[in-house]
Structures are given as C-alpha cells and as structure tokens.
Image (cartoon, rainbow, N blue to C red; front, side, top):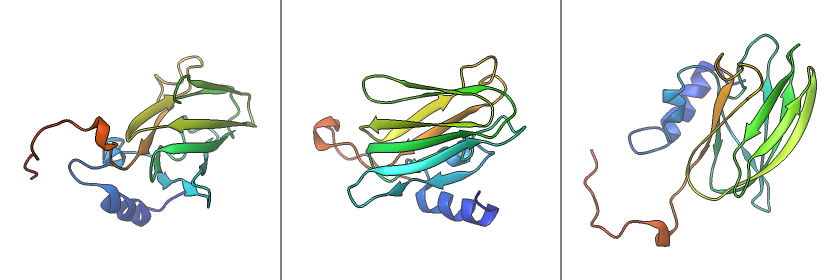
Length: 151
C-alpha cells in the first residue's frame, strides 16, 4: 500500500495535462507501478482487501505496452470476479472468498484499460480499477498533422 506522500510523488512523476493522470481522476485508492523483469515482461499483484469493495491498487501503471502477468487475490469474505482487458480477448478470473488467480495480459498501446468485478453489483458498488499504459503510440499510429501547442 502506498502512503499519501508516495502517491503524491508518483502522480507528480506521471501526472499533468496530456499525461497519465488517471490517479487524479480516480481520487481514492492506491496507485502503484508494475515491476519490469529483465525480459521486458511486467508483473504486479492486485487484491481485494477484506470488507473494502475496492481493488488495491486502484490504478496500476505499466511503464510501456507489452505483456503483464497479474496475480489477483481476493482477501474478502465474499465471492468476486475479475474481468480484465487484453488484446484479442478479455480474461475472466472467478475469485471465491480468500482465493487467488493469475492472468497474463497483452496491452499493446498506451491508454487507460478499465477492469472490474462483473459479479452481482460489484462494479456498481465501486469494484472497478484501471491499468494505465504509459508511453507513446508507434509512429504509424500517429496522426499526420502539425504539432499542436501545449499549455
């Protein structure tokens, strides 16, 4: 879990207009960075704390697009699920109470990727979160237009 100071420092590092400011939009919850292995694959753990109806971290930052291996832990007394974005197809993990699962995702471009628990009314009660992939789009995906002024 990140402290308020660590959260502020991480938001300052990635934040600002036209950058990965998702942590400021999701005003509650924690923010964390995925760990990158030597081969470029990333990894992270996300969990549902007991009686919290929230993902920890609420915002997961990937330093670039690519493959990420997630460990998903349900520490809650209730059953939940995790529906995750991934290129080609979504990944679904059923999470019985006090259980864990693993998912390998491929996210090939920068942006915000939302996920949540589609079980019952979990999403309606706040069990949603985001994976933010930072970085630039490849040159072939950029618009052919002059540079725009930035504030």
